[in-house]
Picture 1 (cartoon, rainbow, N blue to C red):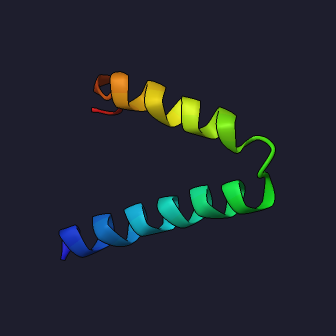
Picture 2: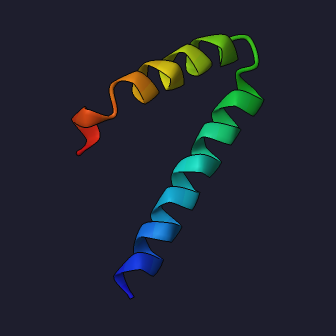
Length: 46
């Protein structure tokens, strides 16, 4: 059951990112740069 909650949680986060990019196309480049920084620095999440 816990993996279902984690799955729903990640889907909700992805939906938030999609909505932010959709409504803020001008700042989508900044969001992409932040995602690249997150990919470089994954350790802070764990």
